[in-house]
Length: 301
Length: 239
Image (cartoon, rainbow over all chains, first blue to last red; front, side, top):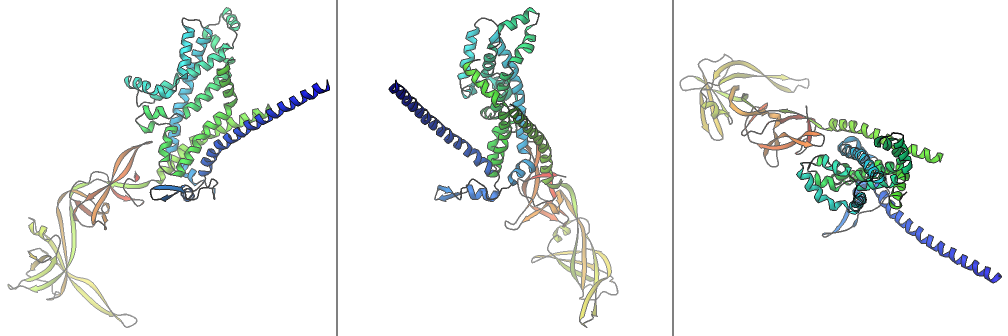
């Protein structure tokens, strides 16, 4: 009896040891990944507080013949913190703000349109019976799997044929119809009991009323997560503006960053940091919803 | 739970502040940018004649026929004046020198314009390096003396020129011995049309210091004055 309990205790000890080792490895990998991520953010952030002289000292290259050998005196922390670059980019010139508002101009209509279309699509898939419903849903899921870069060329041809190339609609319209948004809301709506909806119908409520008064309040979290994901997605859009817009003045900030990078290093750093601010704040505000949304879209409610 | 709510409120507040800052900075940075632009005033070339008034030192001699001759040397417009149909008027004055002693008993010379007389250019002779120009008087003022130096002021209006611009528009590049003007060209920029500078080489064919006539059209919107030093491609604000 005693021998058995000692054996069990040893077994438990060995299991705990294994678990500790596994946790230690997981933590070590996570710490390394965090350092790698934070390093680039710190690099961007601290670089934006350097003055022009220090930037050229830090990132100036030492040349050996035709080869770049090393940075002149690479360091991350600035010797003298200064807001000179911020003043130059955000206060003395207004180009950055122009592209910032361009980004806003794309983000807000796409956000609003995506929510409306996704809610209606999700509601139809979740609560209506129509022919080939499962087939269409499968098509949605397949389309969701296709990388959107693959869809760029067909979209370009369609936009060209309907005369929308080089218009803001070329960016807004294709982004309104996201299969992921419809699928995400569909998953949330599947969790709503059909009995509730039936009861509402019996009481005389129409589909619109049921959607607005009963369904929407129950999928608030889904809509919030869709909104956060959509804002982040649209804010970082690059390929579509570059392909669909000939007029660079229509570019959103994300696509125009390359233009700022051609100016000088300080400008590029400041634009990079300021570009991140709204999207980081949106992420912080909606991170709980976002996690719930992603979890829900994968495992269902 | 309460802490989480407070953090969420702070995050929403920060986003709201960021949007407010973005709106404010958009307007103010635009204003700052416009204020920092170099301000320029522009002119357009005009079709006009340039008035000239040039002073020369002349000499009084007596001609074989007993006429009084004031002769002087010109190296610029004499040929043009000679070919004109109308007569070119000249004012001739003698120069009266006065000698005075200052407090240190040093002799100081001062001059003043004496008696004047008006005539027309009578003779232009091609000589080495320019033209010998003369005007003849039957009678001369009493104070005029033979072989003395006279101030000859030639006033004339040049031929009509198609492209006349203020002389301050023309910049001289000493290194390349080239004259040029800056003109503005419209450029589409993100906030609308802006004006950038383009250098246009010109050949000045006539000038009186105030106006210059150039051979070919330098285009419209020529920069006359600027609040800063100019360079090609510079963005400017037209006043």
